[in-house]
Image 1: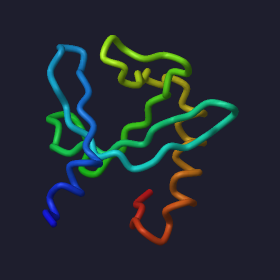
Image 2: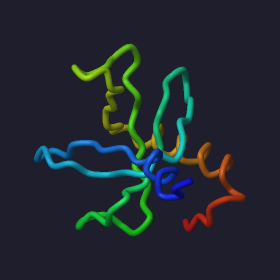
Image 3: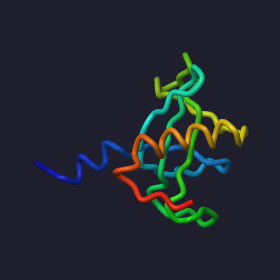
Image 4: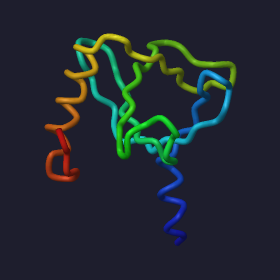
Length: 100
């Protein structure tokens, strides 16, 4: 069995503002106030991101793109981002070493 295949199953490719493909490692889906949010870790170091900084995007309900893929939207509300991240941190406190 190829160990690399298991890692690739966790990789999600999204497009940035310029239309470039950006790879993320899918960490989890968190439900908060009736909405679902995905927690992603950049698979490649982006020029303007902090090391090991997660990305939280909202899963658009009932929405898929033309290829049948789920679509995500950015979250601008700091309170929602913080609440979702706190849930994620509590859920994975034994697996990750979080730095405040």
